[in-house]
Image 1 (cartoon, rainbow, N blue to C red):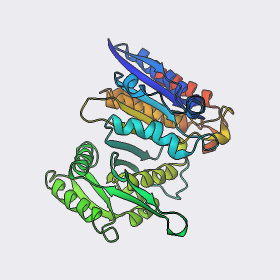
Image 2 (image 1 turned 180 degrees about the horizontal axis):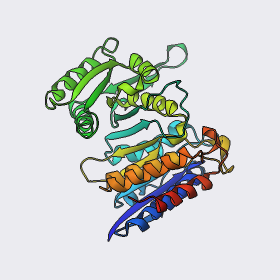
Image 3 (image 1 turned 90 degrees about the vertical axis):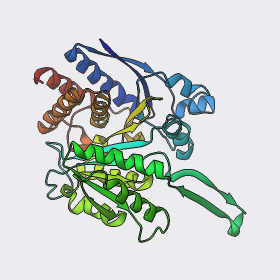
Length: 354
């Protein structure tokens, strides 16, 4: 039997509500499969943990995590308790960087039954591959002087290795999709890093002659996500650009609460981490109405990562079967609770044949 050891970090806010629901779904999937088992180990690291211990995770936290097959994360952050830059860098980004999770993947597509804010979404189905380790989020820079003379410097670092591996990952994904890769750039305004990005994209694209390509400036690309998202297949972007585009992608799906993400380690030294795009949603904590779909779709990406693509597709089909029946939470126009939506997805999993 294939046993997957999963480190579960519910984190903050609604993460504590949706992670257990998604775990129930994965357990239901394993029962259907028969040859696979999930074993979850939960870790209480969060902003509340920080208030008690002065750190988002213990000093040996990474050591505790590195032996797991994957990490399943809920949400990080509660500005009312801990500043965002402390919570994110102390947990989420710390794990991403130290575990060399150099690729971030975030899909966006029209889910059956959900109403997109777009008048005619035309069944868009796109995938953003985000360079996840450097770029604009490089922790290099500093501050000097005080008062009106104070200066803050933030350096964006782009390496050929980092750019190439993100682009190759995007091209490989495009081979199994519609065969089109779009590069997000801004070489008409950012004079060093973005022309370098464009040059590497041109070089890598020559290795994939069967894949169609285009390059779009980030401001126009963000607008095109709204005006013609159906045009796009796989988009490769830098850390900041990918982060922004995927929030737009979540918005045009109808709710950030349905958007999933994967942080991928490519070298096999450390586990990859799977997390929904949404935050901790402090305004609805404890109301039982948090949307579990983002976390459950994230579970689908976890299945794909471990080679269970057929089961992953079965799970996504079950999600869409449930949304098409209107069994959804209030953030997307429904009246059902977190648990009711999860129960229906599990019921559908059990009743729809592979």
